[in-house]
Image (cartoon, rainbow over all chains, first blue to last red; front, side, top):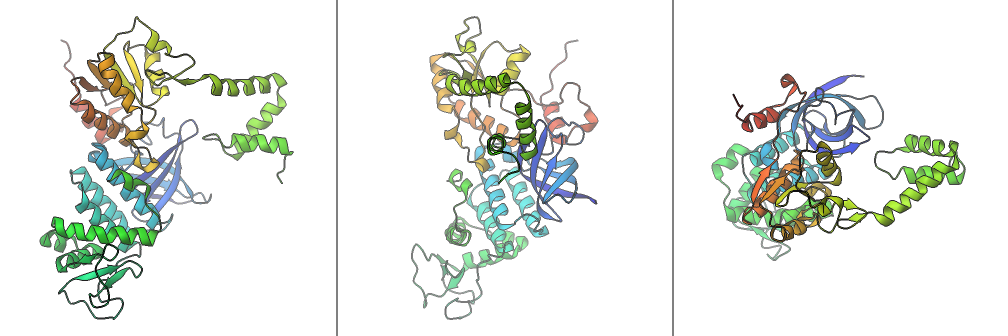
Length: 247
Length: 201
């Protein structure tokens, strides 16, 4: 039995028995994991206020070989992201991010980049950022890390490379763009203009410096949001439970 | 087919539907009930049915009660005009047991939790707003738990109560009695310092 210490973000907690907690968390090294924290609801020393929703904590856990349920030994709070609890819109957006992460990353699938994305997104929420800009950045990058990146290099029908000029349309069944010769623009095949194409490419690759230099205007955000809305609904095959609180 | 006779299997299955009770605990409880006098089983069954038949929400504060209005709402000796908002009946009971609050309560029956599908429309908020004018409330104490959901619920309520002309307060957060500063986290200490009070000298 090896004890592991890793930074982790708390995704869900559930009361279990008299004083235990069932905790779902996303660890930096190992991805999404589940564990039981014995006596956590009474412990002031081993788990002092560190197992609350969305907290970034330094988690110490042991795999005792009992299925996928780990034993949490102790925990220390690193960042509570207090801004996430300051209003319902922040709580809702944070919850949406957690739900999307849970769907894209099954238990035990590790990805440091996803951990970093979740952490950055929560930091942004903590600092008061709300709304569609943060949402599309998170969605675009998370879908890409989860293996559902949108193909932006060439028309998915004729193969003509996209060279950064002119509009392209999004074809949800292909999860990729199409040129205007191959597809017409309508509500189910929304278009992206060159700045939106460029921004989406940067979001998917996680090039935050370039994205910051470029800026993300409301029109660009609006175009990307329409595309991601269709893409997520089609690829995941379900509407996320938390989306109704974002409207 | 299970290892126990069907009626016993059925009892174990029903017990595992309760929160925090797994297969082993359910089997232990079922075998205990089986091993005791019939009286225990009769009383238990009777209590379960009675609680479902008689317990309902108080039409004023939404606490669980067997008579409407509940004992607290019907008590004329309690202070009017001050309302303590709690997440659940257990929280109300804890405050009541402490004996330090003599005002009225309002039970929300939950906290905002998008991950669990709980939004503002699922809480007893309309009832709270109705009481403000009807009972001439001048102060609302937000006593939701200091968790992410509880804090978000408190800030949501503070926002909608803000323009109703009542004083809105939040219970103090910080180092608990008997606590040890060296084991406290950053957020708790921050709250404790922000909520510090003058000491009478």
